[in-house]
Amino acid sequence: MIYWQIFLAFFIPGILGYGGGPASIPLIENEVVGKYGWMTTQEFSEVLAVGNSLPGPIATKMAAYIGFVEGGVIGGFVALLATIAPSIILMLVLMAILLKYKDTPQVKNISKVVRPVIAVLLAVMTYQFAKDSVLSLGTVYTIIMIIGSYILLERVKLHPAFVILIALGVGAISGLIIY
Image (cartoon, rainbow, N blue to C red):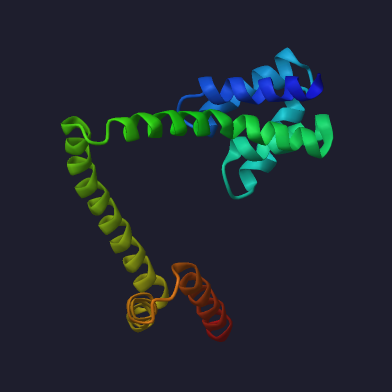
């Protein structure tokens, strides 16, 4: 019974919490503190503070912790699954609809509009990364990393994950040398 309660405590806020993890925190608090009484408001605030100090989505971190405290490893897994399940279900439903109507003019027109928007967003993000890199590491280092990444990706055909790992290694080594 506890696993079902854990599932509901995180699934319902996941459905109703429009706006992501921060928007669902009051809903999670209502379930965890108000409905089930697993924690006091003070304990929930402490879990929230710890969750905010760690990287990653806040709702999943809180769910995994609270689920673990209430139901052990299985409880943590159930809470985590319940937190991400609404998004997964919605994505699957929308993907099924998109695949069903992919040849219609409306869907094709949406794709024509979305692609340029994504391209602009990626270009802005790339510019921002390059600007930040130049400001923090210098122009020469940034140009070397860009050219090296291009060669590894386009000429050597190395998988992007390996290029990222190489860049992390180079950054770590250069960080040790510089500092």
